[in-house]
Structures are given as structure tokens and as C-alpha cells.
Length: 282
Ligand SMILES: Nc1ncnc2c1ncn2[C@@H]1O[C@H](COP(=O)(O)OP(=O)(O)OP(=O)(O)O)[C@@H](O)[C@H]1O
Ligand SMILES: [Mg+2]
Image 1 (cartoon, rainbow, N blue to C red):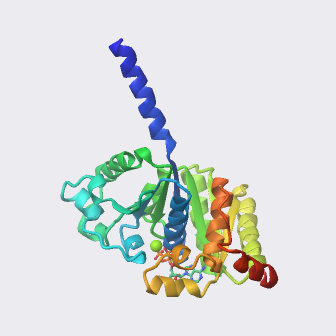
Image 2 (cartoon, rainbow, N blue to C red):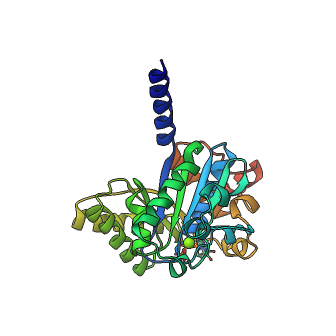
Image 3 (cartoon, protein in one colour):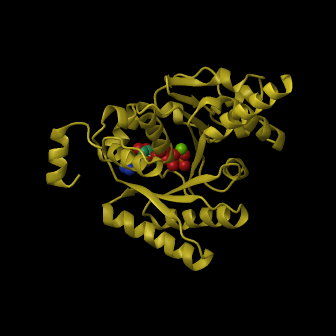
């Protein structure tokens, strides 16, 4: 009897473990919008009742918390060096939205060896036990600290902007993920496009390169236009999806969520905005 109960408990635990969908955002080139995409998508998902955890895996220049104007007492460094549990450093944004802040300069302060990564991963699985979605914001580029987190995540979104350097670096990232780490579930997001046509062309071109050299194509899951409201929101340390829900960037985030998670978030917040958007093509 005790044996059966034990088995049942294990089965329930296993189910709990596989419940959370983990997605890592990365890019070749830095400054392409990953952190803004992660933070705003997480916030919007939380508003429709999804339990979201954002893991700031940028161990060099962590900034999810700064972007949102949050005061954080502890960071991942306290887990690595000071024996804190990851559950103790979690910052609760709202009932559905938690952040694990990285703290800047960790890689310079702490020696991040394989066992440290394993500890981080184990602790993280505790935090996400009851979550629906884990969004991992990685740093840019192909350093070990970035690839470690990407290696252990099935679903990866590569963010690129229309700049040729960004596209070339995005391709380099896709190549490594696909060839070296056998990742199949890679998706493309184009940010800071001039218009929809440019975003589509950039995604198509990136895919043409992938088709030619890797014989693989990847799904484009969304795009965002260059939105002058976003740098303003960043300066004010406000999430644009919250402070300006009808801005281009916020609308793009909602459309991307609907596409990626098969959700049905209302894209425009009120009929007047929708009316103007239908006239001006927003
Ligand atoms: N669609 C957009 N329109 C206008 N500005 C944008 C857009 N997306 C991002 N930005 C601006 O680009 C800057 C960099 O964004 P962000 O920090 O999110 O990039 P990142 O990819 O996380 O950078 P890093 O590689 O350094 O972590 C921010 O100041 C932000 O305001
Ligand atoms: Mg970032």
C-alpha cells in the first residue's frame, strides 16, 4: 500500500516537473531587445493567468529587474556564493509573475564551473515546479555561460534586427544551436523593423541562409517595429505593455504571445484605439 502511494506521488511529481514550458531567448549580437521582449511577454502572460517565471541568465550584464524598476535584495550570486536558496531570491512582480534576478558581474565575481551550473539548474527546477512558463533571458553571443543555458532548453527564440551584423550573428547562433547542440525547436523573432514588409524580408532572408547552409528552416514567430515609445518606457523603468498597452511594441508582444502560445489576448485595449489602428494601419 505504502509502495503504491509512493509510486503515485512520484508520478504526480514527474507530471509537475514536465508541466512548465521553458523558452530561452538569445541573439548573436547584443542590444537587439531580448530583455524587453522577455519582460513584456512575461507580464502579458501573467495578466491572462499564466504562471510565469523569468530567469535572468545574463550573468554578465543582468538587467530584467532594472528594466522594471524593481529593488532586489538578493541575486543569483547569493545562491552561488552565500548558500541562499533560489526560492529566497525570487522577486514577485504579481501573483503570477516571478523574476529570478541575476545581479551584474557574476561571472567576474564567481567561478562558474560545471557543478555551479548544475546547482543553478537544480534550484531553478524547484522554483518552476508550479509555473506554466519559464522565460530565460540569456546574454548575447556564444560564450559558455550563454550556451550552457541554451543547451539545457529545448525551445529557443533567436532575436535579430534588420542590421546585417545582427542577421549574420543570428545565423551563427542558429548554426551552433542546430549543428553542435542538435536543437530542432528554434524560432526567429525580428525586432526594430521599419515595417512589416521589412520584418518579413529579414526573416525570409535569414531562413534562406539556413536552408542553403544547414538545410533547415525555422519558424518566424513574430516581429516588432521600431517603436520610439519603448526607449522612453525603459528610461522610466516601466514595462511598456503595462504603461502603454496600445503602443506598437505592446501590440507586437500580444500578437507574438497569441501565435506562440495559441492564446487569444485582445490586441487592442479599447475600441477607439482599434478604430484608429484600422485607419492608420497600426
Ligand atoms: N522595437 C524596438 N523599438 C525601439 N527600441 C527598441 C526596440 N526593442 C528594443 N529597443 C531598445 O533597444 C535597447 C536594448 O534593448 P534590450 O536591453 O532589451 O536588448 P538586449 O538584447 O536584452 O540587450 P543585451 O544583449 O545587452 O542583453 C533598449 O534601450 C530598448 O529601448
Ligand atoms: Mg538583455
